[in-house]
Length: 312
Image 1 (tube, helix red, strand yellow):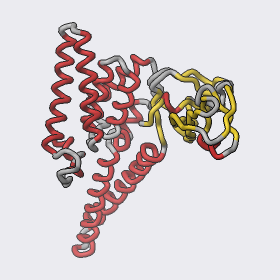
Image 2 (cartoon, one colour):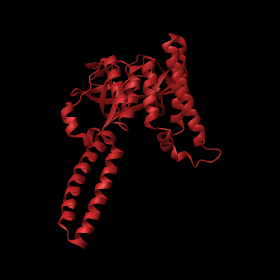
Image 3 (cartoon, one colour):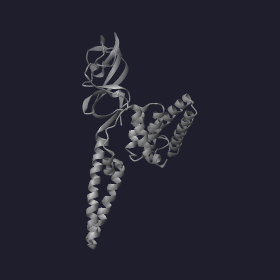
Image 4 (cartoon, one colour):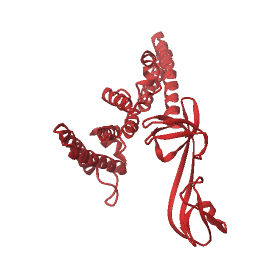
C-alpha cells in the first residue's frame, strides 16, 4: 500500500474539487484487491460466471485507480493477473510488461509473464540467462534504482576526493578510482535502459493482425501476428474520418471536408468501396480516429492497424 500511495503522492495536495484523497484511493485499492480475491474464491468453487463477473469488476476498479493518476507497479501487476484470469492473455502480457519495468526482480511477476507468453504461444527475444546474470546491474535493476545507485557512487567519489585532498591517504584515491569506474558503468547501463524503455517504443498485439508492407489491405502480407506478440514501433500515422450526411451518407477523411465535392465511402478506410458523392455543406454524424504503426518484428518491417495493438 505504501508503494501505491507513493505513486499517487501528487494527489495529496488536491483540493475538494480535485481527485479523491489518499484515504479514498487506499479504500478503492483495497476494494479492488478484495474483489479480485472474491473472484479467486468463486473460481476455486467452480462458479465460473461469478468469477468472470468479479474479475471484470476488479479490472474496472483498478482502471478507476489509474484514471485518478495511480500508475504504480502494484496496480499494473494486479491488472495483469485479473486479465489473465479472464482469459485475455494479450492484455495480461501488456500489464505484466509495464509492471516489469518497475519491478524487474519480482519472481512472481516474471513467472506470471512467462506463463502468459506460453499460453499465448509467443517467444520473447531474450539473451541467455548467464549473460543477464553477468549484467545484473542492467537487467535486474529498474531505471530508478540505477539512478539511485549512480547517486551513491557520486557521493562516495565526492567524499573520497575530499578525503584524498585533505588526508593524502592512498586508500582515499583508490576508493575514488573504483567509485568513478563503477559509476561510469552504471551511467552506461542507465543510459541504455533509458533509451530502450523511454525512447524506443514497444507495443503488444491485443488482437490477431497481419503485418503488411503498406497500410492498405491489398498490400503484401509480411507476417501474421498472434496476440501477445511484442513489436518495436518505428513510426505512427493517424488520420480522422468523418461520417457525413448530405444527398447521401458515407465516410470521408476530415481533410477532404474543405473540398467542394466529397467522395463518400462505405467504411472509414481508403480501401473501402466508394458509395456516392456529396457536395458541401454536409451534416457530420460521427468521427473516428484511425492509427497505423510501422513496426519491426523479427527483423521484418511493415504496417499494422494501431487499434489492434497498444504501447507498453
